[in-house]
Amino acid sequence: MTTPVCTSASKVAAPGTRTLPTSTLSTLSSLTNLPYPSFSAYVKARQPVLLRTARSLTANPCDAEDLLQTALAKTYVAWERIEDHRALDGYVRRALLNTRTSQWRKRKVDEFACDELPEPQGGQATDPAEQQALHDAMWRAIMKLPARQRAMVVLRYYEDLSEVQTAEILGVSVGTVKSAVSRALGKLREDPELEPVR
Image (cartoon, rainbow, N blue to C red; front, side):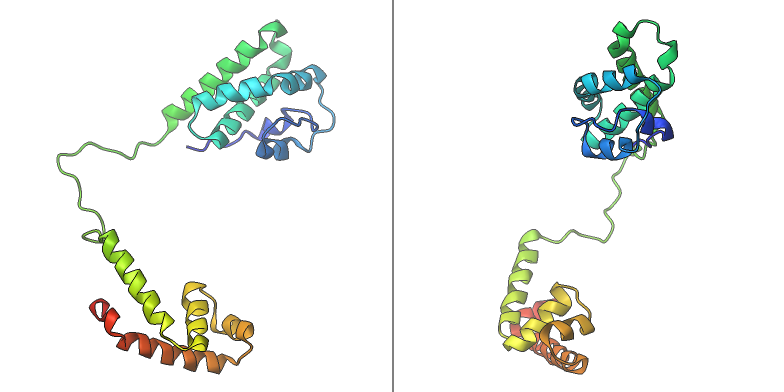
């Protein structure tokens, strides 16, 4: 679950913090003058340790960065009220844990217990061996096409380019692309290796 970052999280660290993750740095890069220089110094000194703690609470490193930002934003807001700055790590860790617990409680549960498993959408799953055999047969059929038609089919259907883009790349008219691709598809439909697909 990705946690929304607090809007006040942009006031968490000084702009020169080198060890913060890239996404966190981009959020914090607009800072110039923090009213609490001691907070800025604390974040610079302790953020790697605190980030490790956040990572131990989440499965995703990006979520850990967001979690740490949120906890530091809460710490920043409460900075004047914190009397013993020697206990800051404990305060931030408690903020990390409380924030993570709140996120966990708010998450939406999409799983329910049931007696029978529902059938997967789309009927029976295709056999990977059959898919590979079809893929190989398709490539063999494409390789039988003349070079120009082959290039057009690959650009149109494998590279997903438009007829105009294909024409520009090959230096031909759009009409040439349309007619050549039409002839190529006709040949592919007649290929005996692809008969089971039809």
